[in-house]
Image (cartoon, rainbow, N blue to C red; front, side, top):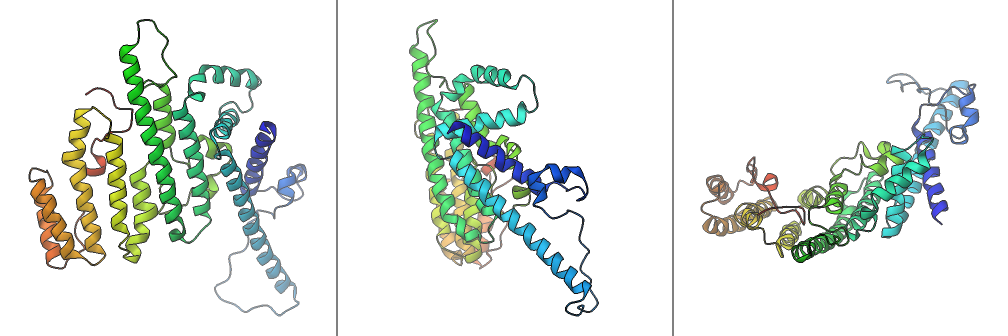
Amino acid sequence: MKTQNSISRRTAAGFLAALFVVATPVSGNAVEDNPFAQALPSATPASTPATEGTQPAAGTPAAKMLEQLDKLAKDRSQKKTTGLKSVTTMVEQAGANQQAAIQAYTDAYRDVELAGKVTQAQDLQAWKDKNSELFTSKEFRGAVQLHLQYLALTLKRSASKQPADFVAPSIAYLKELAAWEAESTKAAELAQQMQAVQQPGAKKQGGQKSGGKPTNQASQILKDSVANSLFAKAWKLAPFLSGLQGWELSPGNAEGIFEQNIRAVYREKKDPKILETWDWQIQMEEAKLANTKKAHALETFRTRKLPELYMRKAADQAKIGQPVAAAAEAMKILNANIEHPSFEKWVKIARQWLMGNTATEEITDSGSGKDAPAYSGGQETGN
């Protein structure tokens, strides 16, 4: 099964590479030697449709060539659609479980970092031995699986013109991300406790040291854009992902997923469900801090980030047609956070809401809000 999966991924990558490469003339040997390229139309640019002129008479050579051009364009579009479906299925299978995810990660590393090397097999084994701690880390394995699951969701979104269809799948993914973050935080805290009572010279447990290699690598793979990841390079996915707009590309950026994948859809429709998304985001951020003993992170969140999240929720409440209710929420926030750096700005915004103006300036100042320091799972060190 391992060999079949590896061959499947290589075959799909080869198909996609052939689909988007500029084909050589039909008389060349390159097309004859490439079974994928043989099935594709020539990449010679078609004539730009004339803006003026008459339709050629039916049955004439010009009319027949126009039909052929239409068929070529249709065939190319169908091949791209088929290729996208094929690679999406492959990515879904790779993210189906942690074992499959790690195998896909290993294959992608081989195909990108060790491609063409005579000593590929030996170098791959040396790399696996060096990183054995990663591959046994539940935290890292879970992060790789999440990355692949989000990559599959992103590929599906790239094939769709209906952003609303991806609100529910994005929410479902965020639940999985929240579960991973909670487990990761617990593991990091437990590792710190174990390290504190560890006897000098004793072997470290399970590669789960807070701030250690598995934690850092897991965090990085969720920060990486799916469009520039090891998988995207190995499977030649750039043509499908490079032009995607209005979609968060980082699988670990919960705020970006809420904002681009979900709230953008709700704002356009002025859907009151947008208010629930702020409650979910606040719960996720609070959950990260639930077991931490890092006083600075707690203080930053409670005095800076949390009030801003509530004010941004109020701003959306104003935008969906409830400006007076939004101002009432702002009053509660202002009363509880009179020392907040954005206090004066928020007073001005609340006044505008009371006067019916919902097109106010941004709630978050530069250097605060989503840019302010916040707790990030088990990665933060110090007090």
